[in-house]
Amino acid sequence: MDSRHDAYLPGAGLIIFLMASVLLIPWLGETLFNSKGEPREAIVAVSMIQQGDWILPHNFGTDIPYKPPFMAWIIAVLAIIFNGGEVNEFLSRLPSALAALAMIMGSFYWARSVRGTRFGMIFSLVLLTCIEVFRASVACRLDMILMACMTGAVYMLYNLMEHDGKWRPMRYAAVIILLSCATLTKGPVGSLLPCLAMGIYGLLRGRRFFPTFFRMLGIAVASMVIPALWYYAAYLRGGDGFLDLMMEENIGRLTGNMSYESHVNPFWYNFVTIILGLLPWTVLLIAALPSARRLKDIRLTPAGKLALTVAATVIIFYCIPSSKRSVYLLPAYPFLCYGITALLCDDSSAKTTRFFTWMMATIAILAPASAVAMQFYPMKFLPMDTLEWWQYIMLAFPVIFGLAWFINRHSPVGHLLLIIWGLYLAYASAIMPAVLNPKSDTNVVPELMKAPAVLCTEKFRPYTANFYLDNKVKPIKSFGELTEYPKGTIILTDVRPETLDIPNGFDTKLLKQRSCDHRTPMYAIIKK
Image 1 (cartoon, rainbow, N blue to C red):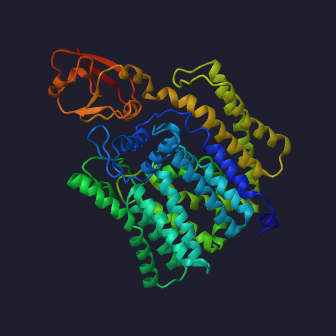
Image 2: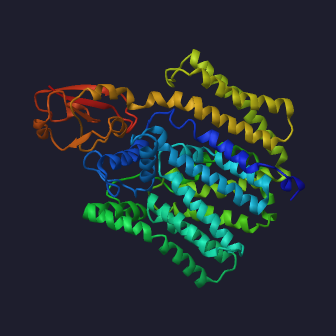
Image 3: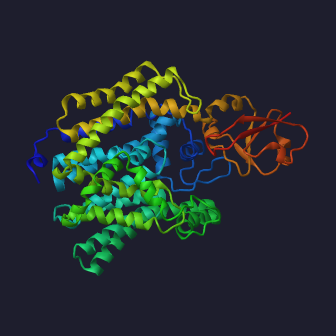
């Protein structure tokens, strides 16, 4: 380790906190919901507040949530405290952003304790600027809260295994609380997977099998106690329907015995998503391949063994089920980023790092210029909203950071991190809302609001429209149920109306050629 790794960097933690906060939080409300995932999670919090049911609320009038309610609880509490009980895009995404911020800070302090302040700063910023991590950090989805809880528990368990210290019972209690929150976010995998990974790590570090096994088993069981209370209460509310859904989501998804196909992908899918999810840092790894032969000479530190063990455990575990999604692998990303950071801090990779910095500096100048050009010369295949004056200022940041590298050309790692952070800042504040807002289904909401009632067919769930209609969409099984609804009632469907057995007295209309929820057309059947 050279002297740079131990350099005195005052205020390093504050710098990381400010950079992460500025990137993640201010822009959460700028982008409308534009896919089914976000409003599907947010509507659970809406239904909690509307119905006063914090255990098992219903949305669409009949549907119970697919996952435990921890994130919905947070959203609902934030809405009650800060917005009079009204859930919006900002508050829906805030739990993910706060979880990401906590994880980034925890990663900084953990890495600083094992490799020094400079390593910790680089590690936390590399993690923050992986595209998959950033995407989960600014979305109303369960995955970032799950990732943050699991990652924090792994850091704490590592410190408990490797360092004797005071307050061990309190630290174990903190681990159990984190894993309990993870379980209440997405089910038992939130506790079992970290305990499995840390059990394997303990064995690799020479711990005895049975003490390690029973310690991890005890932590896993203890972290199930609080979630079990919710599961029992929810079962009392939902009965066998709830039990069947939970079994399918947790056991059926793992064994491939689900009643419907859910994100079924081949074995190699996980590795492709990791390559894409680590962007832009994947480019650095590819450029460093010629020096990969040196890896056989590297002796892993305990922290390096932890990173390798946890990343491998998560990836291999999620290769087992047929249901595969890129977000499932998020708990592996901090430990993959540990390896990227080690590469950046290795003097032998200096030429590769400089090449990557030149490349990203060029992109930092060209990408904002292209976004500005599209404002004056719009493209039909990529519609964009008009940028506000302040968004042009945000686009200037990566350009300034890129030009700074062209002028200075010293400290390539520092310039590289600043350039990539600037690109993400421009994207989050200006480009993302301008590109994604036109995809949202909000343009059909004003027309739907005029209807005395909005319904949907049994197999079609317009999640975005339902959120913006304040959870007022109800499903129907047949047109015979419409006798009690007034003239002007709208039934939403993604099935071509001419293929349905629609009785007389109805008009049909194409509302949208491509709905953001299901990427299919959205039709309206209107009662005359």
